[in-house]
Image (cartoon, rainbow, N blue to C red; front, top):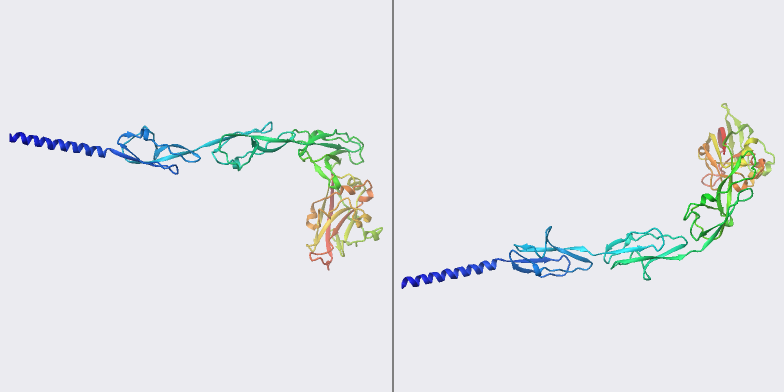
Length: 419
């Protein structure tokens, strides 16, 4: 009897120990998963059996402007079916929600590829340039009448359409002058240029057909100018047209390039009509090397050297004139300019070439090669109007006071190139 009681007690103790062990093992098999939504909506932790998956407990948080892209443990994604064996904190990954903006040029050019940006963002520097359309001016991009620009927030897929306003047409008339072929007038849309939509400027080049004065061998077209109030605006194929205009053809003579060495012995010691020159001549000597030494004194003192008959003929039809003076001047700070004209009109400010404006006086050193500015308005057909080359000094120093000492120029040669 005693043995039976003892066995029953032992069996009860073993059973209780087993049940307690099972309970303890069940408690340790639960795990906890916490969630870091990284700025999204808060998500509560989840506890479940070790080795199980989240299943229906898998949370889907929200965050403005972005889409939820899953929970991750480091670089490993944890889906609703992933089995989890340890306590872990899962990190939310987010993907920007994107919208697409399509641009309809509405018969304009070019066409633009759609642009994708984050929802709620702006196009900024991705905003397209203004399209173009013949006969129209671009006004804006709009959606159902609402104008958008680079700073407009975009919250959905949209199509922006170009809005246009028709343009006025202006008449362009070509005045080729006497002795040249005629060019028919054309129409150009406001703000466009002659070559805006097609290369047609080259077809508006006239030809000169009348005889030309010798020694020129012909005349070639130079450019078109628009001359409101004497402004002489040059028009090319790319100049915008903003009103009805008449373009005047400018011509140049066809002249073979020719060089002339000026005879320094033709410099004047005395002038006819000297009182009209009104400026003193320098004294002239010749040194042992055969160089001409000019000593300038007084205001606007100038050398006057007579040109040859052939040079005069070419000067009257020249397109460009270059002078090359070989020599030296002392003191080195004295300034000079070269002009071509005659002794009477020199004093009156008339010359075929001027360095007054835009070319001021320059150091003697720069006369080694100087392109002269031709005053087209002063061009005549009279050889006597170009019968002298003048080399003039400045009248005053930097302080505005007249120089107290003479300016001495030693000149070896003067060459003039006409073409």
